[in-house]
Length: 111
Length: 111
Image 1 (cartoon, each protein chain N blue to C red):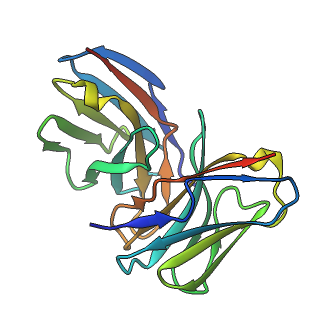
Image 2: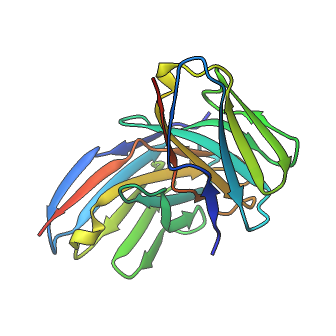
């Protein structure tokens, strides 16, 4: 099956700085890569996703990049704010199949 | 907006009890999933279902069973609860090829 690795497990940044979280996957047939944000006491919420026919996608301060050859994808958050503090999960799947999740990154934005 | 509702936010049970966790989604999603979330281990898939009365084992099905009698409802059953099943349980649903939507989780403690 698929194996998704996520780094780092914890990340602290100053408010206004950028944060980058990286994931690698093992199954070259995986073609869909969502990112989730989980705030304390809540379930994971989708924040951005990318499919394998696209190399980069942006939504305001959040961007995701995908390198299919190297089998890795990254989440970039610019101009971080305290409300960005949460646990972030990456995931990989093949269309119609189950999702495989990374182990999570706890991001702390220091005011 | 998709709503995935888990019946209990917190639950305390005793070793050996039969425990039911309920999940309901309101968007006519075909697929439903149960995960457990533990620190450092991310989200691990217990069981999933692609249709009514259909179920498939995930990565850690031992000690659990599921029931899907109606499309909108997916139940997780701990046949005889043990202390190592103390965890956060997350339910999710999706349409084939689309992102998963999560409930807010049930924090289950087995004493």
